[in-house]
Image (cartoon, rainbow, N blue to C red; front, side, top):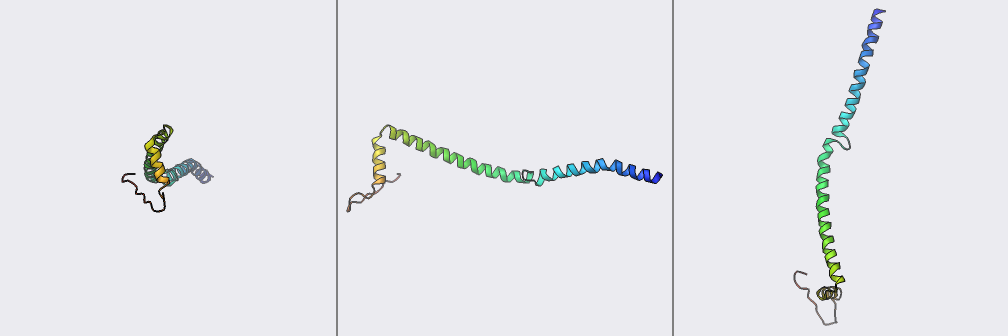
Length: 103
């Protein structure tokens, strides 16, 4: 009877630490190797850097396009000529059009 009581007390005392250890182990595993764990953090930061560079390029492109649209709204003659030359590069049958450097 005494042995049975000491065995049941031993297992009763060990259940709470075992469950606690299992829960801590589960969350610890996912903290390091999970989808959002520490090991994935470096890859995520690298991807973020790439996306920030792409965002800066897109913002620059947008600013240039907005500037160009603003010039078209003002009917800038140089811009109209540039667009016409770009669209009508073929001209007459014996005419050759050469784009200027830097355009």
